[in-house]
Length: 132
Length: 139
Image (cartoon, rainbow over all chains, first blue to last red; front, side):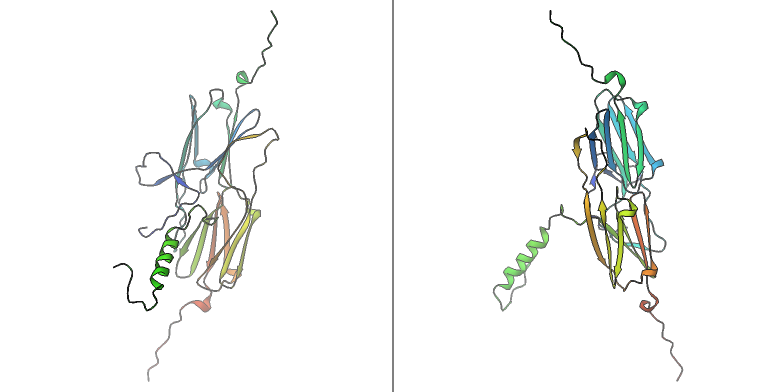
């Protein structure tokens, strides 16, 4: 739509390269919490269904992508827009001690929650210093 | 010349400049939540809003005359006690947003759906508001 007025309040366009199909990419706003046995990330991805989320952890790079299903309403045209629609993408560099096999991901009400438990070997071990 | 001269009031020019100055500097960071998109058609109007992380039960939609109000609360996530924040970008708390529609809303014609954090409210145009065709009688 040529006359679309897009004002992004919460959504920041990502610095990522452009998409080939001309869509926008947004950087999902994220809360990150340390929970003792791991790290929990909560990413806002409104309009993204659970099956359209892609999470990869390669080496230390955690990549989160979400494909949005554009809203369209039968016989209605967009007259005024305060938010834009587009895919979501964000990349984090994690510390080295997460096990990609154990990542739990869940989407609820447009928020992706990722739980990354620390690998067992990486749990802190206390080292006792012996007196010589 | 950008500002029309010939005002009998010498302060009118200053006021008009002040007005322009104020409208251009509306801070965007204080934009209303939730952001709303408005859809229009012949028989209906629809609103869509992004409400990620809000439970459907925590959203209230009310209508009065021409005004439709979306309000509710976004609750912070439940975390174990030992949790510490690395990064906090999201906001939590109560919100309210009122939108004026072009016609008086009949609550039986309002339909709301919430999916993947997007709220969709469709409002049907009442029959009384629709244009009526006038037949021309032969004299």
